[in-house]
Image (cartoon, rainbow, N blue to C red; front, side, top):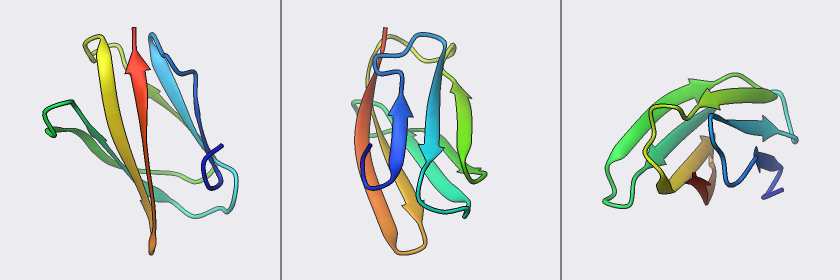
Length: 79
């Protein structure tokens, strides 16, 4: 758990779950590849959201979760 958000499983295969454990507000999720290119930029509903990773190549990805003035950065691995 990082600042109220849980991201699992990590490493992932077919999908990744982003779970908001702190409030019921929507959040913006941006996913970047190792070159800094934005792979995904989407608004997610509050609570738990599954994101398909089937179109992602194996490797390391970074994410930014933004919710009002709060920003959380992290990374995940696709196998």
